[in-house]
Amino acid sequence: MTARRKRLAAEGQEWEQLKIQMQAMKQDDIAWREGRAAVYVFYAGEDVLHVAQEAYTLFMSENGLGMARAFPSLRQMEEEVLDIALDLLHGGEEAVGNMTSGGTESIFMAVKTARDWARVHRPSATQPEILLPYSAHPAFDKAAHYLNLTIHRVPVGADFRADVSAMAAAISKQTIMIVGSAPCFPYGVMDPIADLSSLAQARDLWLHVDACVGGFIAPFVRQIGYPVPDFDFTLPGVCSMSADLHKYGFAAKGASTVLYRSEDLRHYQPFSCSDWPNGTMTTPTFAGTRPGGAIAAAWAVLHYLGVAGYQEKARAMMQTRDALTSGIEAIDGLHVWGKPDLGLIAYGSHELDIAAVGDGLRAAGWFVVQTQHPKGLHLMLTPAHAPIVDAYLRDVATAVARVRQGSLMSSEAEVRYS
Ligand SMILES: *Cc1c(COP(=O)(O)O)cnc(C)c1O
Image (cartoon, rainbow, N blue to C red; front, side):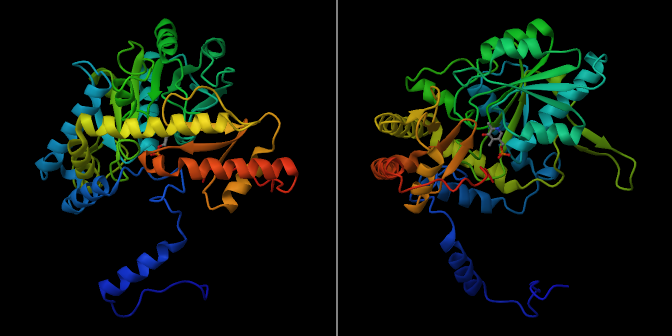
């Protein structure tokens, strides 16, 4: 055993003391409340946070595993959360879904379900393959890795959106599933889901739309008047979707949804085991024990904000996006990549070392997320960023000026997202 390994204290300590220690531990964390980071935390204000916290603690001990018999409260909340999700994303009468712990689990379940569907409907695919736009989230690679499937990433077009003809050309006998993002995380652009839907129908493939980051905000962005292309179950080729409550749904972490066009498709999702001492155990998703708090917090925040609340958050996010985008474009040498549809953007330069600009921003106290292809800086905006637009743009301009003078060089570190 190493000398550094922490051991459990012999005697318990007072909570008040522990709480002080824990609060002190936060001092080096990123200052998300102050808008210093545009990643990881979706902050919609103290009131929303308070609702999520109270609702979470109210159901913190309850277990979603037992909702069918022991916790009708959780069952009702989960059903209502799913009703709301399916309504927002135009699921028809037949559409169904489940709550999961996050986007990664939602995607895992959709991939597993598509794989098992394909075993019945595409038996000729003996080494099944999934086609992804290059911009799709690594959760698909992770699912494929666990599920013994092959991933094929297809380069995106010049507009950073999925290149549907290149994807069509990449379809083989082994292809079982194609994916589009709404929007993709790296550039914030929506893939042409309508075209992917037609392709999926023409070739009898499972189309999953990854709306993890957009699913709970895009409907409201459209309602307040911004153009948002069709991306959901309105399109007949969409078989499944993932939409995270713990992102722009502003719920507590540990909450997402995986949605299916019909029960016929979801049929391949649950897992059941009876050959053990306690009898049949059937779980709809990956998890066994499921935190009641995550379900409760999602239910509470959806009801607390309502359509009007989400529209207000969407407006704050989009106005911030517009201000930042035009501010960045106004700085000589910088360009926003593509035409972002929601509040995620990436920007870079054809002439300047953008990683060095990122270093300058980091030195000025901003938490910086980079992209590698093309090299850029990434922002996922929330209402928390409305107050920082001017300060951020000033620091970008300063960093750019220093890079031009040659007084700021890139550290050339590996680009990492986590
Ligand atoms: C965040 C995200 C995921 C993964 O979700 P987690 O909740 O982090 O597991 C998948 N796809 C997209 C587009 C995302 O933004």
